[in-house]
Length: 430
Picture 1 (cartoon, helix red, strand yellow):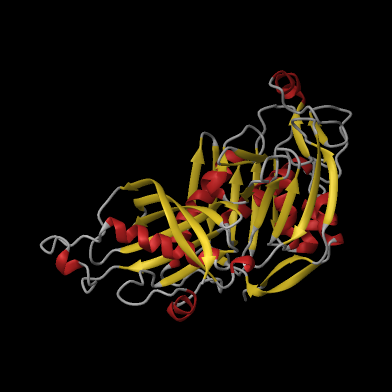
Picture 2 (cartoon, rainbow, N blue to C red):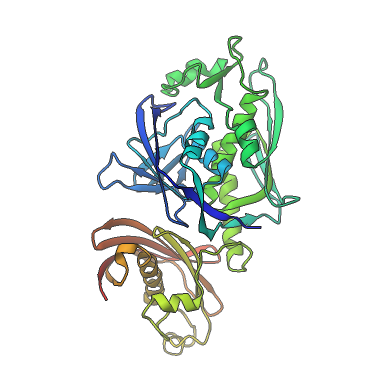
């Protein structure tokens, strides 16, 4: 059964040092509207740009998860994201005054308890879930990840570790996720390194904020574990944090062998591709979309100029995805290359603009206004759209300044990009 989305009732704050940078960072965690997801906001930069917690923005960085959007980065967020997933908190605005999230005690326990103190509350919207129904496999060197359909709804994580240092014992750990089990079995597990790696990591400029309190040093006789197989449990914790970048609550059994953040990201990317391919078949459970009746209530456009059939996903006023089913009955085909029907590129852009307008009108201060397209930039028409195609449109808000909004959009057919552009809108009174 699909649960409802959750946020916090009260804002909470914390301050700490980044595990890798060693810099102190202030974090303020605020409630957010349904379908907003978790959004990191860099308050130390001009106009406080944001980076959503989604695999679209993941970039490879050694030994931590990093997100990058339009030159704005946040990193070492995996422990916090795991705490959010473990507690079942879905929508948050996370303000921080630096690029690296505080490391806390090297685990997710402090973040789990911090979120609990903010009092998680249910929201009206149902959570988007993705129940895997076929195996998905990725491999990177000697690391592998396999995601299998779950025997019953829910997420089970299993990790098999084999360390390069012969003095460090290998092993495995498995966990079926729920808040109580997460708090007891996973959240306290701290980050780690091998004793043989310490000098190399320090020479590479990593671990400037690491101490014996927040980092396990495996192979060091002075190390005392909080839990049996603490390091392996922490690998499961990292995996859970990375899986939360999917943008949906995953129901599957995931088995990892020697995997790290880069392999985790490969799996999430594969899952996202599969989820998007199944979206239009109604196999992904969600209530955040809009059918044609709701579209007609929001947009002034009517036939033959309404170019959106269904909105399948909305994330606050940050992102939206819609579908345009292209048929031979479209009024433009008889006059536009009738011997070889092609959807005009300008109408692909118009469909993108209509979706962007709907997204912006969800913002409370734009209620009762019209989104007027002001300019187009970086327009690229990369492929033909013909009868029988399903045009998938995706738009994302890049910048909002007063009544002016910049949106990035693209359209795909069967996974291939056919159009993309940056659109500028001016919001005017209706």
